[in-house]
Length: 204
Image (tube, rainbow, N blue to C red; front, side, top):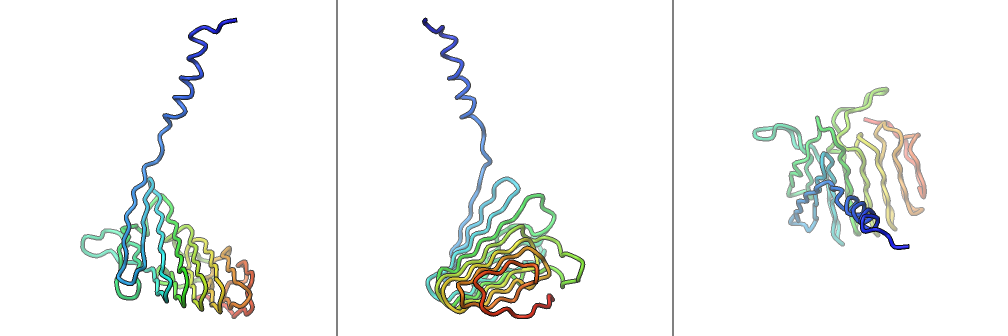
C-alpha cells in the first residue's frame, strides 16, 4: 500500500517544529587577573554564573561586595586576587534570577573566601538576604582554607592535604567534604564527611 505525499510530510514538519524551539541566549565575559586567576561570568536570561579558576601555585581568591557608588546603581559581586579586583557587574540585590558561584583553586596552598559577601551580622532566627543561590568552593592538593558566606547553599570540597573548611554561618544545609585529614568549623545542621577535627561554631 503506497502512502500519500501528505502522510510522508507530517512527521517531517513535526520534526522541524521540534528543532525550531528557541534556547535562552547566553553571554560570557572572561578576565584573567595579573596573578593568573581567571574569572568567567555567564549571563543566561536572568541567571548569572560566576566561575573562578586559580593556578597551580598558592592562590588568594576573595569574593566581596562592591558597594553602589557613582555609576553603580546596585551593589555588584567583585572577585579579587588580593591585588586586583574584577567587577563582575552581577547585581547582588533586587534580581529575580539566581546567581551560582564556582571557585576551583586547582592546587597549592590556597585561601578561598566568600566572607566578603556577608551582608549583615548573623542574628539567630533571622536569615540574611541572598547574595547568591549556590556556591561551590574546591581545592586540589595543598594546605588550603575555604570559607563560605552566610548566603545560599554552600559546598566546600578539600583536596589532599591539611585543610580548614568553614561553613559556620548560621544557615543549615551546607556541606563540607574533606579527604580524612581536615578541620571543619560548621553549623550543627551542616553535612560533614571526611573531617578529622570539628571546631566549635558560633556564627557572627
